[in-house]
Length: 402
Image (cartoon, rainbow, N blue to C red; front, side, top):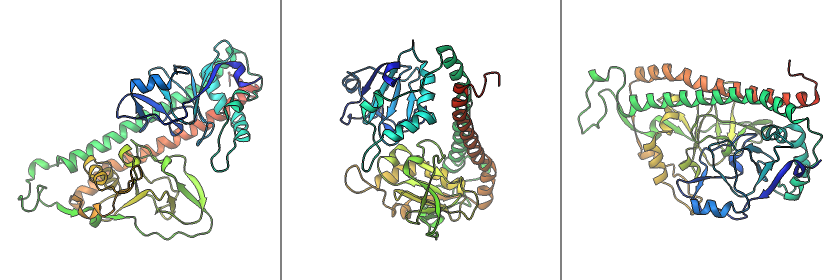
């Protein structure tokens, strides 16, 4: 049985770049397709007119699947209700035939080890792994279980995804709490006891008494020098590992060598290139096993390390709209490849609070940062367990009662 045998249609995307705008319909490109879910952080948007042109072959609808034909090749995500996407470049649309296959089951199955192995065997391309449309349509599938069994399997796996989604919501809430506290204490100066303070005279700056205005480069190390051995593999963070709206750094790779920015736990990774900076890509490093471990990353990161502040303060400062606006304004270079000029950190002034207030703040938000990391690890474990269950449930090795 071939994949096309259980589908109503499999269609390719338009082979040109859609014009984008700030608002509108989400244009799903390969970076927006995770293993079974969409990554909508910083997704491109298109107008209604563009959407109409880009969906002439088929209008995507809830229950359809979108597959990445290149990097990350083979990833598939199910379109949920409430999203009206169009296909971006190097993607394809799969519409399951509901009389033959349950869409949510097919989503798990195509992302499972069996089909992913078939995809790896079919990919070609000298530099970038690529899937041909014909290979997707004619992909040989094993016999699928009856529809009622497919639905039962999908329901079991959906339970795991529900836990993952619950963790994601908690992560968003906890991080927003930390950002709100930062803005209240250090931007609006409504910190504990602020009503007993007064602002310093205008010649010093509109900051509370006891605070000091300093250039950011004085209180934060910009791309600190770190020595890393050349031998052996090390954690490596490409730009795609950074989220647009979260501190999380996901899907870390392992690479040999020692080239590129180097960082350790407690450092902040700040995207320096357009459009990653505008999209908000910023990460907080806390995935390394020990304080002495060193990781490498994309040359398009600026590493920020606390010098006289705290790691949490530096990360939340990097998320502050004023700093990001100043960094964006400093960008130079060819259109589409503009980069932040590091000298901006010499002129950007930071209101540095007294040490006691910094420590008090870290005592409050430090556990929040650790909770975000623990929830992320828990979600990874849930996803791994879910992926292990699929082949066992299909083969009957594991019964539903188990």
